[in-house]
Length: 363
Ligand SMILES: *Cc1c(COP(=O)(O)O)cnc(C)c1O
Image 1: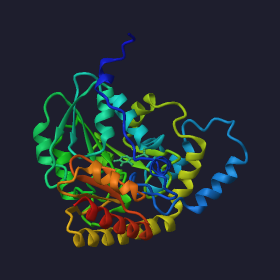
Image 2: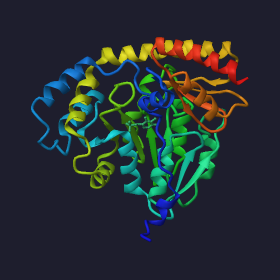
Image 3: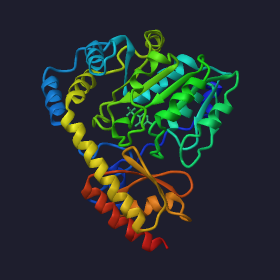
């Protein structure tokens, strides 16, 4: 038998949200609403689509600029950074992998939280690191417990703010003292995939500049969520030039494709599109809170584009399947928890109707 590295045997393949086509085929449905992968329900900016069509007419036989300099300069200008602070990636997922490959090896310990993004643990395990999973407190990261879990083997801490899947947020008052209490030789990955959706004024304001004061903090960003580019795969890491140089050794030479570079540049400047997505998300969130109150289901208040709720006593897989039969795809979590992506108002209303129907049947 051909042996892989031992570390790989501990890794289970990532299970993404079910594709709409699969559910349509399985249940013989004409239409399906996917509220399972935190995608942008309003689609992609028309300006991005136009730019992509223009570019693709010239063909794709030429390699992308491997250093992604144009988009890095543009992001730098937008956020008052330098291009050497930015490392582009094939979605933020790629960034998480690059970080793990750059810093982790066997014998290292990493801290993750219960109910957080699965790729933190997966990427760490692939590198042979040992995972310490810290239980949450009220569906929030328990920073006190994380601090206590640090020992001389701790190499990296994965934070997600706001968190996927719970949607909960750590405040500036919580994050800054935590960062200051962590030894400076421990990497803190600060993933802000949903940062643009936050409505609270207590959210850490300037995380894109954290590295200036705290060089051990790497801020991760993505164009997959509010910018509507999930299908293209584009994200980036913001760090000190020294860390950037290390990450740059690890990444693939052309890890941000030509279309992604173009789309990201246009998406970044389409403030109207971002505002529209933000407003719609806020409206949908209030609507869904009211729904959960009405049907008396516990839910967690969210600062992201998804809501974590529970149907007590019903395994999440059962509820998820019942909803799929009705043409709604959600994301089952552990036990009876479900993660629901906030959709358009039309989608949210359809979800409300189908949820009520399914609850009636399951009880
Ligand atoms: C969606 C998501 C990402 C980024 O995904 P990409 O599509 O790979 O950019 C990163 N972190 C979290 C927590 C996410 O939910």
